Image (cartoon, rainbow, N blue to C red; front, side, top):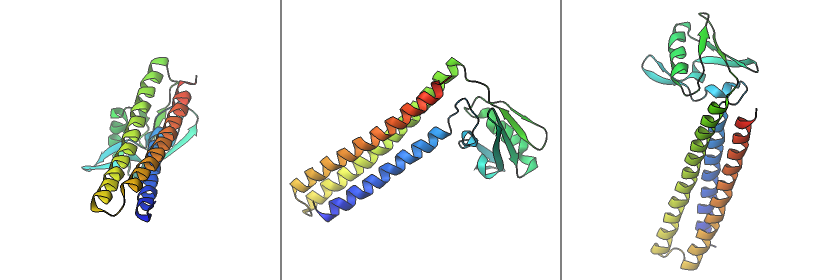
Length: 188
């Protein structure tokens, strides 16, 4: 195969890997039975008119397996942080003592577990779409190369076949992550 096609495939593999990595990071922000500071990664706070990630405004820690604490750098923002946590899809109720917000992580009931599995499946589907978008872009580039006469039809076909293998591999990797996360959520 030509060097140009090899470069396109290497770029596609890298971009697809980033999509899998990003999806894996999103999975970490979905709650299981135990407390993890990553649960609050998706919480965005309206801080003086700017949408700011909670992680940039406070120290988040898990002193116990069922408790998260959020200590804002700016004490005056404690109410807006509390409001953002309440409005998130985490299903957690914050309580504060003026300096520290405590989030008790209740055990998951069957209904909530099933809701979380749906959330995780949605995140996985977004990851699959991102991988397929990379595939579509590279397929387009391959066709342009063939139309411009830079590569032959055989090389283009081999490139498409190789690209499909990479796509299938990354989707399978993502599906494996999804199965693990579902098992973790459904674990009692």
